[in-house]
Image (cartoon, rainbow, N blue to C red; front, top):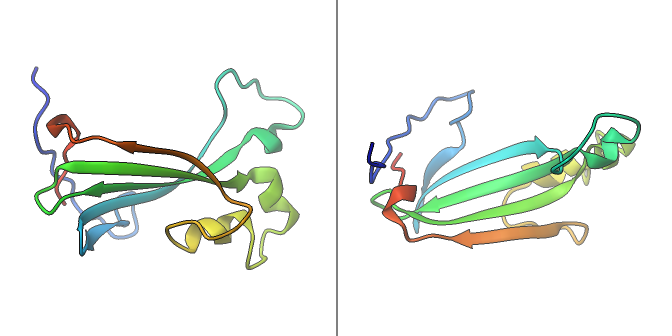
Length: 121
């Protein structure tokens, strides 16, 4: 089966696609997610291994993928130290893009001009 050039994604308020939209440069899909490192085994200290990431996918006006930015906001252990603080891990993640906190760590920036990575909204 051939990979489609464009994959339509519907906006669903209050669900996983509630963070898609348009900006002056085109379209975007943003999300906040947690992940454990490869080879992780659940046990003591898991809170230090559970990492919160902010993901921003950018598309041109026609829906062709332009780039994806992934920012590590912190760990679950950091979040639990001050869960309701204005500078907690979740608050930093929810604050928007790009990361502005000195505690933030840029994880990767991937750029792809491939039509197989396309998605209009």
